[in-house]
Structures are given as structure tokens and as C-alpha cells.
Length: 267
Image (cartoon, rainbow, N blue to C red; front, side):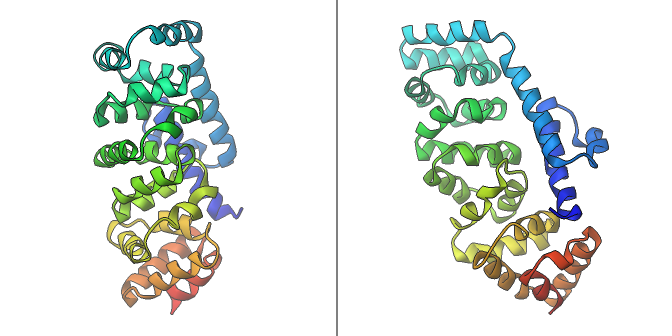
């Protein structure tokens, strides 16, 4: 990984760590020189500490949940437990039971839970959530501009659910989510779910919203033919936009790493 790409990845990891700690990302700027993998490890350890606190009590609560109808539990979850406690318990209940309870909860509350959830601990539950529900929750998270939560779940739901989520994200949101994906190796597969016509929209969103750093991060992780398709979308931009983007790439130290997109920017 080049130093320039490492710097971008560190930015993304700092944002995600700040979210876990409940702090502004700016307060963690001193971590910018730390390897991104180490920042990720710190985030995962912090999450583990938070989720393992009082785990014995949570296990008893999860076991007791088998005694009540799912519809009743859903009401208790929403009105009494709240999203934080529900997120802690989600990975401890039987997957089928968790899906059944979730089916009785409204999308805004599920979005609240998702924001507090460690998806690694609830993968089995997440895999069983209906695609329509995943799409509704993604729409709510997008309304809140909670890109980090959307990005955390990409590796834990089926491709159909990822596609449903992408359908409710606008082109700028796709870039924002892609930048904070937990598993960047999934990025090509995610972008292949986009209709070809949306690739142009993603590039135009980078221009419109000033998201070139996010766009470059995406471009650097793609291989043909997808990299070529995005480069073609870049080449179709007006010359002034290409010049500004090239200047941004040069300032970030990324221009010479962009492959076909570099040629498109300089054409």
C-alpha cells in the first residue's frame, strides 16, 4: 500500500473509531500517522470491551426472551430496553428468534439498533433479515447520513440485501459509504451491483460534492473492467472538472497511482 493510500485509509479508520468512542474525528487526528490496521484493531478491541461488559446478565436476558411471544418482546425492546441494550443482546439470541423479533419493529428503531450493533456478533441474525427490511433501514440511515453504520453491514448481509441498500442511496452516498466500508475487498462486488448508468452519476457526485478523495479511494481498489468503466466516466467530465480533480489527486500524492483514471484526468 502506498503512503498516499495509507493516509486515506487512516482517515476512514479514524472516523470509524471516533464513532465507537463517541468523539469528534478531529480529536483523534493525532492517529493519522498510525498504520490503518492498528487503528482498526483498536476500534475492534474497544468494541469488544463495550460488548463484553455485563455479558453474563445479557445472556440471561437473551435466554429469558424465549419465554415471550416475539410481538411482545418487540414492544418491550422498543419501549423499555431501547436500542443500545437491544444491540448488546442481538448477538446472544437465537438467529431465527432475532429475525422474528425484528419483523415486529419499525425501520427507524431498527436503524437506532443498527447504529449501536457490532455486526460481527449478529451476522446470523442479519443474514436472515428480509431484503425489504434491510432496504428500509438503509433508507433511514441514509436520511440520517449515517454512512459508517451502512458501511459496517455490507459484509454481513446477502448480496440481495446489499443491492437493496444501494438502490436507496444516491450517488454521493455510495461514495461516502464506500470510503468507510469495513471490508474494502468487497468494494468491487458492491460496485458491480450498480447499473452502468450510475457510474457516471457517482463520478459527477464526486465533482458536485467535493468527494474526490473518496472517489480516488474507490478507483485505487478496482480492477478491469470496472476500473476502465469509471475512468471512462471521468474522461466524460468537462475539462475544468478534470483539471480540478487532477490537482486534488496530485495534492494527495495519488495521481500517478490512478491508472486509466490518471490518463482520463490528464486528457
